[in-house]
Length: 188
Image (cartoon, rainbow, N blue to C red; front, side):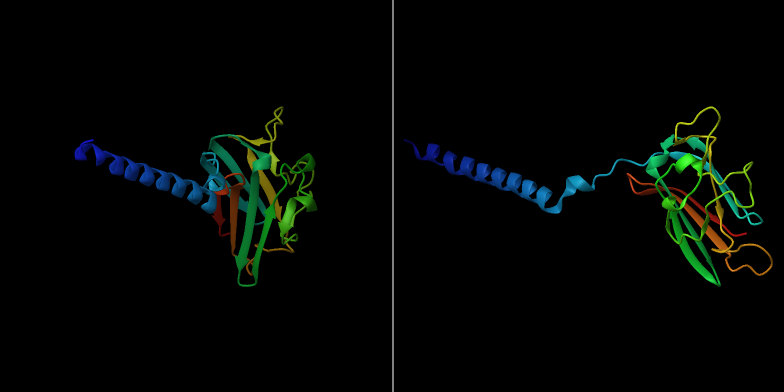
């Protein structure tokens, strides 16, 4: 056997050893850092929204103008009221609200911040989370549909010349992707 033929074996074995070490390193790092569980589905695209806050009745409306339809059970609404006399936060969860009316099971955090009933608005202007276009009632937030809720005066009062709150921030969160898809800040 020739000396030149014997040198091939150490080179091939070195390449194989390096390849095995690299493959094992990738497998161990994926399992150790648990990379595969952190991959979230992408957030839906909400191309445009409009927001309105009426300080008199303390009513918030956010209308989905353009973008993808989003199932209501994939949404949470975070409400933050801040000011010289208040710093309060609540979340609307477990959507769609039963019968579209907000109840205590739909509120986490400061339960006194969000108005839970018809209140002063009456049956012609319900405190619904998602206002559906009749006859559609598919529990999705589609373009042209509105998320609506009221702020309880006892939780944060934006009315009058001496309000205890001066800024209201509303975030709409897509829960599967944990992404904020809408952010509106109102300063009445």
